[in-house]
Length: 287
Image (cartoon, rainbow, N blue to C red; front, side, top):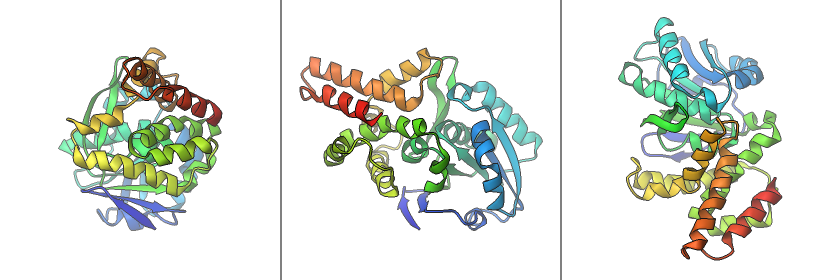
């Protein structure tokens, strides 16, 4: 096991989770845990998860899809958690992709003015981005991530095993975020990705992407200045997601947003000429 320290919490990396109680026990010794997930992850991994803990699991399942990261889901989760007798010292687990880590973080931040939560991201885009940095929130109406907070998990637990059952498209969706991260923080990494468009996604690559994001997060946790760089491609990307009613995935939208941003940068002569075409060819080859 290895880890990355994020200030108030750690991101732990394990090849395969053998049991979860050793992690839960660091924060309380209760006999139950509240797990928020979506319908897809629940169908794929419910049995696996239940084998990893002796605690009673209180499942809260949200319909899959980013269009369900909304006020209705948020309010229903608050109601369900209160009716299922969540208390201030209980532990909530975000078990899923970026939609679930965003939604659960906001629920945990606001219910009872803050309840501890652990994030177990099951998608590549959640492992490299959504579960890292303390941002969480929900979509409001057709507007992406307009309601939220900054609230850290007490732990992020990353395991490659969850990625093994993901459709290939979900892996490819994360390439927009990986390319963005390399462009803003490690040009050598970008050049390597460019030469190897169908690179195997390894724990080493995930760690590299997280370490780049970590640098910006620790300098500007509340997103007032330098952390804005992490939004490269996201202004257009979020607009594309919203306009599609979230039928276009976040990773695909960010990829298109990167290209549009680079195109404008070249027109303004603040971006290296030809970079937009290079990135477009890379993303096309990766798909």
